Length: 511
Image (cartoon, rainbow, N blue to C red; front, side):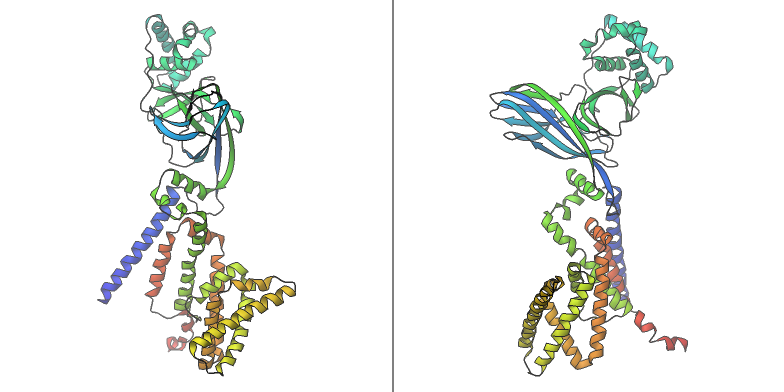
C-alpha cells in the first residue's frame, strides 16, 4: 500500500512538471511569450482615412481590410465614424469593413485603425484569392502574336518563373527597344493598365501571378498611398516584383491590402471619395503583443486565462499568483532548513505587507507593534480573562498602537508610521497572543527563535516576491504554479535530516 501511494505521488509530480513546463514552452515557441520582462517588439499602428461627400440620403461605405502576410498579424481593428454602424464581413472571398448610415449630408470622414504585429509562423493569407485566381483575359489575334514574340524574348535568359517575369517587366519598361512591347503597351487600357497587361502576358507564358497592393511598414508618415506590385508563384511561395524596376523585392514588411480585381473602396450615396493611409511604429512589451495576438486569433490558451479578465481583476491576481512562491519558501525553510516560525503562513502575510511598506520600514514597524503588544498582553495575564475576551482586548490594544504610531510619526515629520495600517490587525493580534502564551510556556528564548525565524522567512519571501522577474513569470506563465506544486509535493515526501539538524547529529556520523 505504501509503495502504491509512493508511485501515485511520483506519477502526479511527473504530470504536474510535464504540464507546467510543456504549456510554458508552447507559449514561448508558438504564441511568442518572452521570459524577459523587458523584451519588446515593434507594433505598427496603421490608419486608413476615408473622405467623401454624402448626397443627403442613405450611405454605405465598403472598404477592403488588411490581411495577415509574411508573419504580420493584423489585430485590434477599431473604427471611428460617428453616426455610422460598422461591421466586418467576408464578401466574394475578401474581408471588408462596411459602414452604413440612414442619412448623411456633406463632407464625411471615416477612420479605420489596426495594430500590426510580427509573429513567427503567422504568415497565412486569409481570403485573398491565393488559391482562387482572377479571371484573366485571353489574348487573340495580333495581340496574341505580339505576346508570343515578347515572351520568346523574355525566355532567352531562362525558363524560371521569376526570371521570365523580371525579363518581361524589363522589356515592358523599355518599349523603345522592343516593338512587341511598344505595341502591347498601346493596348494596356484593355487589360486594366500595365500591371494587368503584365499579368495577362505571364498567364500566356504559363506563369501564375497576381497583382497586389499594400503598404511597406518600414516607412512612416501621413497621407501615404498603397502601391501596386506583381507577385509570381514559385513553387509553394510567392515572390514579389517591383514593376517599376523589374527587380525582386523583400516583402517581409509588406502589409497586404488588395489582390487582383478587389475594390479598395466603394461608396454608395456619396461622391468624391478618397482614401489615404498613415503608419507609425512603436515599441511595446513582447508579452502584450503575444496576448493581443492570441486574443485576436481566439487562442483557447489565451481566451480562457487570466488575460481575458478585466484589468482590475488581473491586478488582483498578479498578487495572488505570487503567494504559492511564498508558500514554497516556507516549505523549504521549515522542512529542509529546519527554521521555526510563528504560524505556518504568517511569514507570507508579513512579506505581503513588506511589499507595501518596504523591507526595513516593515521590519521596524512589526517589531515595534509586537513588542508593545507583548508588554500590554503580559498585563492581561494577571487579570485571568477568558480566551475570547482576552484576544478581543489584544485587538483593541493593537488598534490603539496603530493609531499612536501613526500620530507620533506624523507629528515628528515622518510618513513611515502611516504604513502601519498595511499590517493585518487580526493576524497581528493573534500573533501577539501566540507569542505571549509561548513566552509563558517555553520562555523568551523560544519566542526569539520563532520570531526571528518568522522574520527571516518573511524577508526571504519578500525578496523573492519583489523580484520583477518572478512577478513577470507568475503573470505571464501562471501554469508554472503546477511546477511549484510539484516541488512542494516532492519536499513533502522528504523524511531525511533538516539542514539545522546536521550539526546536532554530527557526532553520530563521526562515531
